[in-house]
Structures are given as C-alpha cells and as structure tokens.
View 1 (cartoon, rainbow, N blue to C red):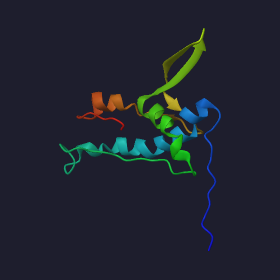
View 2 (tube, helix red, strand yellow):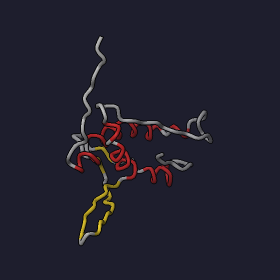
View 3 (cartoon, one colour):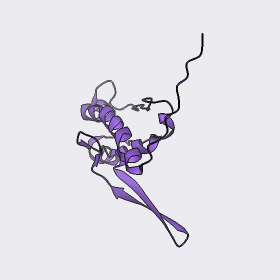
View 4 (cartoon, rainbow, N blue to C red):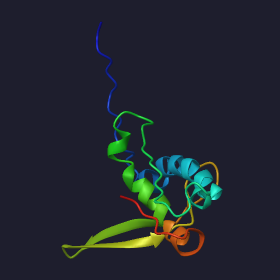
Length: 124
C-alpha cells in the first residue's frame, strides 16, 4: 500500500485575494453564525472563559498562509505597505467586508469586546 500524497497548495499571488478574499470568506462563514448566537450569554457559559477554535484545512498547506485572512476578517483591516527611499512603511486600511460572491461583513472583534460581549475577545 502506498502512502497518500497530497501536494502543497501555494498561497494566492494576489495580496487582496490572500488577505480578504476566499480564505477570509471561509472564516467569515464559519464565525459569523457563532457570533450571532451570542454563545457567551448562554447560562452554562456565562461568567466562564469562552473560546472558539478555528483552523483552515481546506487545502494541503493552506493553514500556513491563511492566518492573515483570519486577522483581516476579525479586526476589519487590510495592511498595505510600500517602500520609499529604502524605508519600509505599513499602514492599515479599514475594510467593511471580505471579497466573495456573497456580501460578508467583517466581524471586528473589538466591537464584540466593546458592545456585544461582556469580556475581552482576542486571537492567540
């Protein structure tokens, strides 16, 4: 019996696609219903630490490059960068939705922390 071999899938070349495209849309479709259900308010969870675990297994090797799309979706920003006179500059650009055939607003965990969730929310 030969071992299964699954070829590594490289990250999308286009930065917008990689950061706020299909990978971000996949995370959004998984996380938005959970946020909408407000699990942290359920009696058996309220007052206790609460964690949602999420990972990207959609293609071989995708977990190694899709993390940035999760951050873009959770924090509602896309990072632009440029080099000028040998100096590198980076800045965040607010985004309202991820790029997908559906309109999917970003979650913005800081808004959960500030107005919808009684405890801090974050990504480790």
